[in-house]
Each structure stands twice: as C-alpha cells, then as structure tokens.
Length: 246
Image (cartoon, rainbow, N blue to C red; front, side):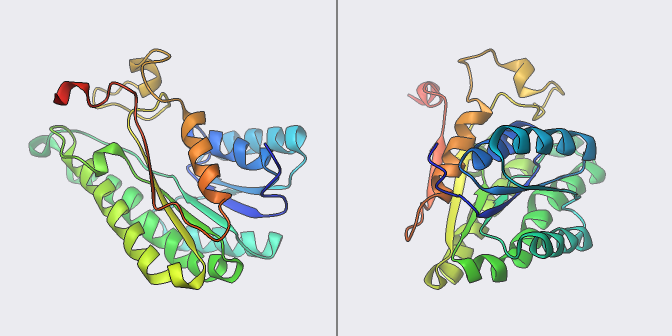
C-alpha cells in the first residue's frame, strides 16, 4: 500500500462484514479516514478500533439503515461535520432474500428493493454534491447477477441490473464534473452473504472455490485511487465461471 488516499474521507455502507469490512481495511491501509455505516453498531466499533490501531487513521462509526432516507441524510451530515467533506462513497450494502418468484413474499421483495435499490439511490443522491466538490469517486457494488440472466432469485438479480444501469447513467450526468463512477461486479464471494438455501457463501464455498472479500476490496480501492480517470466497470469472477457455457 502507498498511502495514496492519505487524508481523504471514505464512506462504506454494509461495512460490518464481508466485502464492506475488507474494503474499510484496505482504504485505511491507503491512508483514508473511514466512515463505517451498517446496522450492527458493535461490529462497526470493533472494526473501527482495529483500523485506528493498525493504520493510524481516523474513523467514524454511524449505525445506519440505508433503507431509511433520514438515516442516510444523518450519515452524510455527521461525516461532513466530522471530516469537512467526502471523497469516496462505496455503495456496498445489499442482500438477497428468498428465491423463486412464485414463492417470494411481499416482505422479502420489499426488503431487497428497499436495500439494494432505494438505499443506493438515497446514498448517491445525498453524496453527489460533496463528492463533486472534491472530484472524488462513487463506487457501486454490482454483481455477476446484474449482467447475465439467472434461473434463481430473479428479483435480487433485477435489483443489481438496476444498480448497474443507475451507476452508468449517474456517470453520464456527473462525469464531466470530475466525479469518478465505477461499478464492481463480483460473482460468488466467500462472505456472510446468504445463498438461496440460507447458508452463507463462506459455508458453501471452500477456499479457492470462490472470490475472497479482500480481492473485491482491492478492486474497489484501485478504482478509488484513480486520478483524472474513471474505471467504468470491473468484473471479478472465479476462473471457471464461464466453463459450463461452452
């Protein structure tokens, strides 16, 4: 690491575990002050202490439910009040519920839509003025599921198609104002993310069978360290991902 983000301020949603926590660690290793946002206050506080001890950066813990507009607005206000501005926003919070459309409950549908779609919109809308001011970066966690049709959990997949399309359209709107916009599309990641059978991907996949959270975090930080350019999209797949298609 090169401390290339020294003094910059980054917000990471879904920061308490998996890709979010790994991203916080790598941002801190690059010298960024990190704002940790998720619903689990205890996990965030533990991670923040580790970042400060290990990397000597400043952190801010803001328990946040991105499904609530007021909570997102409060997150942005507290960040600006503490650090004076925002350089990087990582829209990482996301989840999957249920699977088959016929069996999906309204509650499961609403939870995915409110988190994966509404939460990304609330965060992006609130962050744009601040990121624009510093010519920073908006980074969106897409998915392999947001690029290719899939036979299971179509609603989750559709929410990631939305994220990808939204991000690219935001790039068209703010790119000429100096804002970098990147979509990072991982396939399976060994994290606490739940598979359709209720097990986590960390339980489903052995090491070397799927991408590790740290690999996705590296891609996110690489995008955030670009100056004057913008990586439109980064795909991260296990090496045999397309083998069954040939």
